[in-house]
Amino acid sequence: GENVEQHPSTLSVQEGDSAVIKCTYSDSASNYFPWYKQELGKRPQLIIDIRSNVGEKKDQRIAVTLNKTAKHFSLHITETQPEDSAVYFCAASIRGPLETSGSRLTFGEGTQLTVNP
Amino acid sequence: SQTIHQWPATLVQPVGSPLSLECTVEGTSNPNLYWYRQAAGRGLQLLFYSVGIGQISSEVPQNLSASRPQDRQFILSSKKLLLSDSGFYLCAWSPLTGAVSGNTIYFGEGSWLTVV
Image 1 (spheres, each protein chain N blue to C red):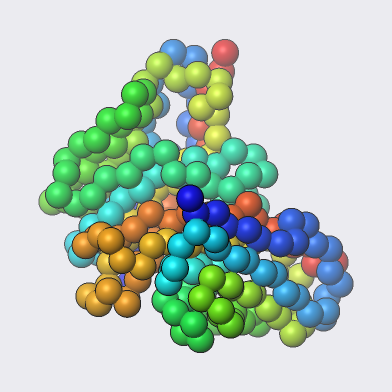
Image 2: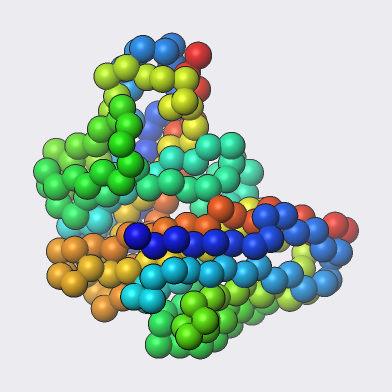
């Protein structure tokens, strides 16, 4: 099955700096790569995603890049703010061959991001 | 719009007691449904997923089971809880169709289970 590795496990930055979190996946058939943000005690929430036919996607201060050849993807947060502090999860998904197959996400272990004021 | 409800929000149960967590989705039909477990605030482990009524796939062997009695209802159960079952349980859904690649998964608010 799919295996997703995420680095670093913890990341501390100063407010205003950039933060980068990297993930690698094992199954070349994976074709969907979402990123989730989870604040303490709350559910993970989708912040950005990318599909395999795109190399980069941006949404304001957040961007994701995908290198299918190398099987890795990264989350970039610019101009970090204290409210960006949370655990971030990457994930990879394969869609089944049938419409009834569904799709399943395999998650990385998470990165605890701390933005210091 | 679609919403997902999960209950109870918190639960303290003794070892050996039964468990039932329930999840319902509104505003969509034929969703994929999932149960995830998260221990110590990190690592989301997929426990079960379902693509239709009565269709359950288990990802890991354990003393938990899942059922889908209705299209938008998903239940996580155990006959006898273990200490190791403690954790944060998350129900989730995704659209069954609409994209040629994997679909976004949306999580419920979670249930904190403490086995004592």
